[in-house]
Length: 208
Image (cartoon, rainbow, N blue to C red; front, side):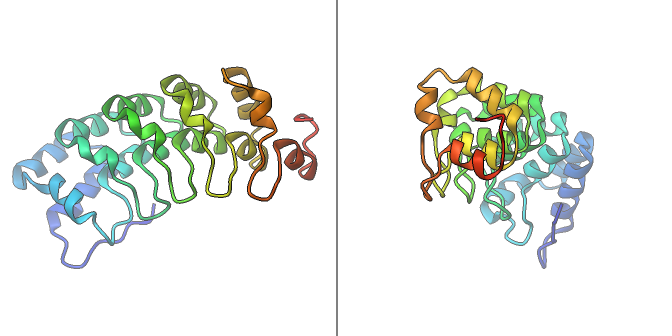
């Protein structure tokens, strides 16, 4: 995880990121006693030279209790995007397949299911790309409409399953969709490719 400490950043803020990496809730509580506005400052400053917020870090490491405590004290952290790929904490949790954290983040901010990263991918798209089948099901149950969008290149979630060779995710999605699956399969990306075109190019006979 690439983190650079901002010049002049306080020792307390640096220690906050240490606490997030470790998932150390008592350490976090001590820091909040020392500097009660430290989480607010993370939101205001957006830690320009630190590429991810403390919540991103804790989510990536799978520290559920730390995530819960951060959100209890500062729910707005759930809306922050990182400076790497424009990812929300829910994108990170979806990529990692941290199911309890996904549920916690959705409960805090349900509309984050529709958050788009720099490539136009919602969290459910990211779960598909990383082959996180259980996360895929959880996100679809939370809001199935988030699976119907397109990336900046016009790709549907099914396009991404084929591009990243996530055929189990593709199969699961086709089982779950409650709208016109055939229309989704026949959708074209910005280059005019359907899912079947990409399957032929990639020699994925299972899709055909």
